[in-house]
Picture 1 (cartoon, rainbow, N blue to C red):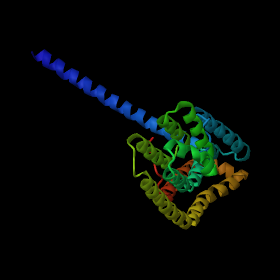
Picture 2 (picture 1 turned 90 degrees about the horizontal axis):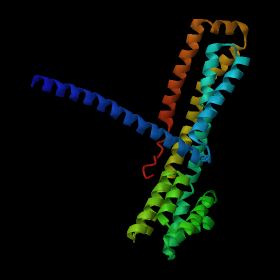
Picture 3 (picture 1 turned 180 degrees about the vertical axis):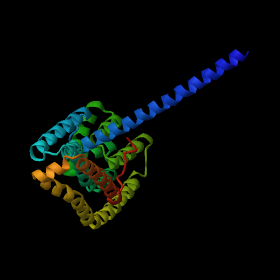
Picture 4 (picture 1 turned 90 degrees about the vertical axis):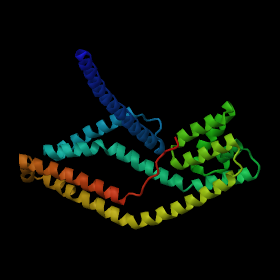
Length: 287
């Protein structure tokens, strides 16, 4: 009897240990999936939907090698070469993210016009697929190609919901997600208040854009000054490293430690500055 109890206790302990590692593995998979989705959305928003995650990683690795090679030629300081290589590795992702945010801000200004066209089409008696397809000719220039692809896809498949899903994937925009889900719901359950919903959404977008524009205008000088304050010490360090006396000093263990510690402080300060000055970005919750 005691042997059975001991066996049950050992089995329970092993199962608990295994389940803990299993939960951790599932959490890691979910976190990895969120990172991949974020990267894919950024690539799509930047107009680089044909670039895969692995290709982006390869670009980061190549950028790091080029940065290290250039730094080795001009700055013969190992610690500084390592810092420049790490900074160069993040350069492709920084450019992609910057372009994606720029494109997303530009498209956000066009969505009120899109919704107004949809509302006028619905009030004129067009069906939802016809109203959405008409945006290929009447909508904003930046989105006409996407809606033209929707119209072509709907003509071929005749499946409104599937065509909306593909349009949502091409746009990869949180505002587009809300508009598309409202259209899907209206098509499925026959929403009689679709025009009112679109008018309310248009008013909300106008208010949000106006508020964001005012805050961004006030923050622009502060953010630019903060970035200059972060970059200035490293520019001075790069100039000093071209001199043999300074390069010899920075090659010592104390000099290398100073450079690496300065890099960590710079990264921490820059992240804090970005978090404080960044406007909250709307996440895609209606994928």
